[in-house]
Length: 484
Ligand SMILES: *Cc1c(COP(=O)(O)O)cnc(C)c1O
Image 1 (cartoon, rainbow, N blue to C red):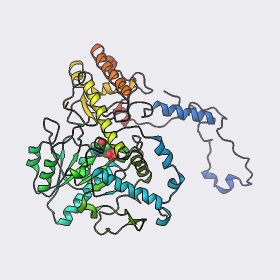
Image 2: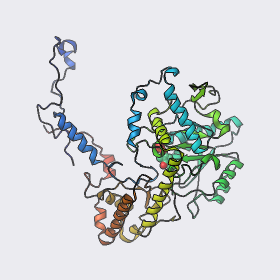
Image 3: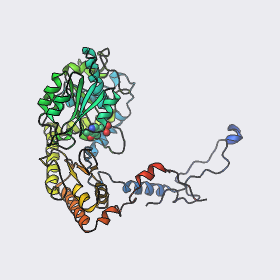
Image 4: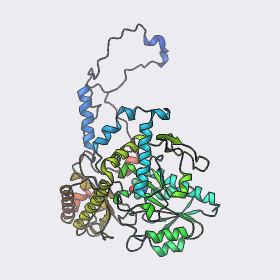
């Protein structure tokens, strides 16, 4: 473990040189005696170089995409071009104030307007709002629109929303948060929506169906048109969780295959760095008759002038975030889309799909893949063979991967695969990197056969060894005390 900044403390060291105090006032003259500190403050005394080295060292202890492969399924941990970061920091963008008059922010409004349109074009939806600030927030917005649609039609008996059992955890949470009952249906033997099971639960009380396509098994729901027909036959709305859009760019428009509403995860598909809990953006697109429910304001253009349009505020679900969403994340997506163009975007998805299928075919001999048809941008392998024969868990495999310099895949999700390892390589990885990962995974499968203990004690080579998750939660202690 790296030394903490407190351990680097040396009395008298300073990282700053302050000018001589030339103010003739004593602190004790303005602050009452009882509030004054009695003991000197205990903070680390270090030089500027100590501080620099400390934080640079700390930053390199973590795993991040610039350091190594990060195949975290469903999260699309692709490389984010640094050009976006440079451009978004341009003071013409970063110094704007959200209360500035419209005529002084025409460029910013143009960016938002163009992005709304580009996302509508990419998705085949009529219109897109940029206000939601996360995927889950987009879901919340989308299901609020489902509710507004039924309310406007007097469909007051609709109180259920259907989800497949492969759904991301945010989907049932969204349904419950909006006051609907969750109806879960099992997947069929191909890992897709079971049409018969869907028909059985689809009655007049159904408000909608939330589906991820490709689903969380990395499989394209090829019966989507039939699914849409079934849902629409009871006047339900089909919602697409668009977190997996990295598989569809330029290939499939969700708005053309029956989806009525969808959200995008700009921080996954459209290159905003994420994973550290930073800001995201979860725009929502809708079909034509639902546009009137979108949050206000939309960005519109009239006589070559951009403006914030509140004109549908009577029918709108209202505002779901302060101001206009996460502007800087939206700017990054705009730059990314404009840089790549239509062909470039399609190339992303084609390469993401090729990379995932390459890994799938190379690894399926070593790790069980229940649904092993050709996949989209990700697939779900399993540690089931290893667990049955050697008692090694998927968690152990994930920890051992850290020793080999890779971030682990998403594990134990989706819930319907035992010992799941959800692997998403993304389009930004070269064949060389994929081959190194394959080699590491094969080495691990051999280690398990020869000496399963290696796995159970992994990681051996990371700054922090195996963490006791339960103890970390129960006895959380984030203080550091300098020795007296
Ligand atoms: C990431 C993800 C979400 C949630 O998106 P957030 O931006 O993390 O709120 C929803 N569904 C799927 C399938 C996802 O992968």
